[in-house]
Amino acid sequence: MTKPRNPGFTPNQEAPKAPRPKAPFARIGEKQSLAARPKDRREGRAESRTERSLRDRSGERKVYSGNHAAAKPANGVPRSPGAMINRRAADRLRSGYLWVYASDIETIEVPDADNPPALLPVADSRGLLLGTALYSPSSQIALRLISREAVDEPGWLQLLAARLRSAIARRKPLLSDQTNACRLCFSEADELPGLVADKYGDLVIFQLLAKGLDSAAVRETCVRVLREELAPRAILERPDPRMRELEGLNAPNLEPLYVSEDTDKPGAAGTHFLLNGLVFEYDANSGQKTGAFLDQRDNYAAARDWAKKLGAAKWDGGGRALDVCCYQGGFALHLAQVCDQVTGIDASRASLEVAERNFAANRSRMQAEVDWVEGDAFQILRDWSDAGEKFDAIVLDPPAFAKTRRAVEGALRGYKELNLRALKMLRSGGLLVTCSCSHHVSLAELEATVASAAVDAGRRVRLLERRGAALDHPVVLNLPETEYLKCLVLEVE
Image (cartoon, rainbow, N blue to C red; front, side, top):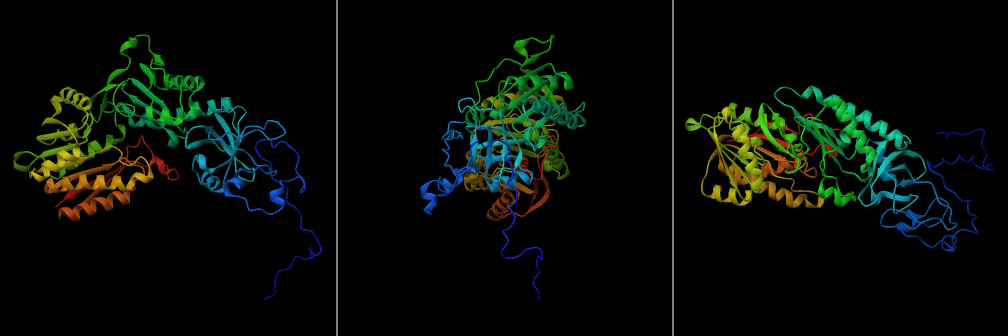
């Protein structure tokens, strides 16, 4: 076969050189000649991977400190701010991902390492601009992309306001006279990395979970948009202690950021809200997450409806249901609408006290009395299953067992133990609703774990539904972290 030829090129010609792409931030300093380059490079000494990753495009080696700040070049001329990332991270950003881990940063320039900027331009190893990111100097997630373009602070605040308004507009159709609480903004899923906002009746609570958001201008923008869109009674910021430590956030201001004129400031943190027609107590100064588990709203109703369909309310005159890790009674109260006996288990006495008050507020809509049991779920289930206790419906909604990928193996053992004990206690034809909110545990891993527990328990399980978080916690396909909650609805034979 004849090889193609380029008639305009002869072997003696020098190949044309492509123009070198410009970096999104200035690289100051003249090119070094071969003779001026470091001696060890001319002599061909093999460089370590770290040295290669930290050498800038002119051949200088750069010092990369623990807070991601590089030292100034030898000539003492400061560089423009910006981050250059490796190919792996650049490919992820181009595929729609929004995070860059500290280990994927090749070089980074900040004007003042002691007062790092909130925003940094991000480029690939060729110097091509990938976008602008929120910068977290002390976090493993060092960069969170907020735009595919170069954006300054005024432009970012405009984006923040517009995206928050859009996020609220998507949630308003989910609100009704039966449900007046929902997640208003879900961080990366709404193109606002690190920002979470929830509506609980007439209160709005938000969290800032990234160092780049920790500013008065960001708070003022959020409060202004939330007031204009929702006219709440009060707006409060609720810090997350773990994220505050990881991100190096400033000490929070616990005073409300906004209180309407007809509201007493000391009582601004408390209210009641509705989920599926049931009343729940809310206190912004207590509880987990922002105060309640709004992501389970649709699964609460599904558990109630499936218990009714499977006849859990008709066994010996009345079905018996168990809510394990019940928190403030979400599943238990929904099951009490159709079952005659309901028990809720949780390790937190404070949570059970709120659950009891929630039960009292809904007493007229309850078919069952609810018993609350304080204690370790694993120990209680072992004792009860060994004692031969039987239930017609069991819900397992434990906390996240796997905070990191390395914790998955241990988490799966925990999920298997809970499901094994539940399967041993369910009557034939009973309902098992089993959940995992561990992002690092996949749906396939959860299903395999429950299947293994069913084999050990000698039970046959039929999958009725695979469920996830409510619609106000949307899943973005190229952002796997947005899909964290898994819920299996099973019939046990």
